[in-house]
Image (cartoon, rainbow, N blue to C red; front, side, top):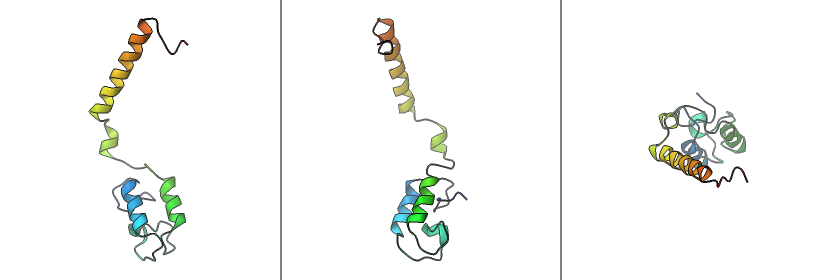
Length: 94
């Protein structure tokens, strides 16, 4: 388990932040399931710091493959940049 992963899905993300926020300031005996990552029995700033330190760590199928729209945007941007440089206007040259 990754520290900061409150819901146990293998990644630290906004869902975990929602769990920490929902239990903020509360006493708990459920540990990381309630966002108490340091095990002191209270969800607070140290737990938020632990979560922030591990933010975006973990695995995700969505992270493994870029969305087609992002890929298309990258292709269009590269094509425009190449076309501009070919027409003797290249912002990279100044």
